[in-house]
Image (cartoon, rainbow, N blue to C red; front, side, top):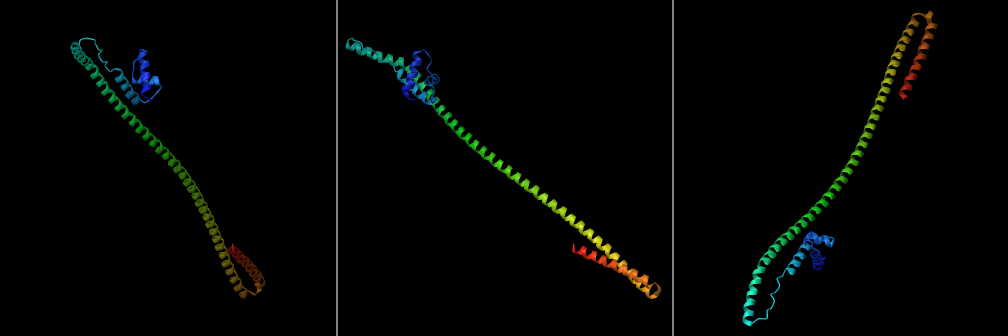
Length: 225
């Protein structure tokens, strides 16, 4: 988009009785930068609104000179208001151009900031997802560790109960052995005192010794376990 495009669009709008503004020119062009259109439109207005030179008069030289001076003065006085208005418009347009440039710069800065925030948000979401996965993995490991510890405690408790049961059996067998030994000793003493009961005492002693032997075998078997 250049000056010729803006001037052509502005001329068409003016010929059609339409207001010539930045928005109407941009609509006629189908888009474009507001600041660029404003600059070209100001140049178009300045070129279009130049005061025309006074016409030459075929009069006596002195009269021509006087008329020329008068015409020049009149043109300057008549155009002073237009030039002042144009100058004022130029100042306003320049202010608008500066404001437009500032707004575009601010918009670009905001766009860049928004892009940075979007990138930071995506990074934060990715980091959060990684942390969620890490937490889930640690929870799974903790559950497994608890399960292993529980199984170990149960196994230890079972072993302790088995040991306690074996100790109780050994104590009972020891008590039986001591009882049998005592009975065997009593029978031996009774044999010396009662020869008549020798056969019965011997049989009882043998039975007790056999029982004692079985008990010792049971103790040995329990110890091997």
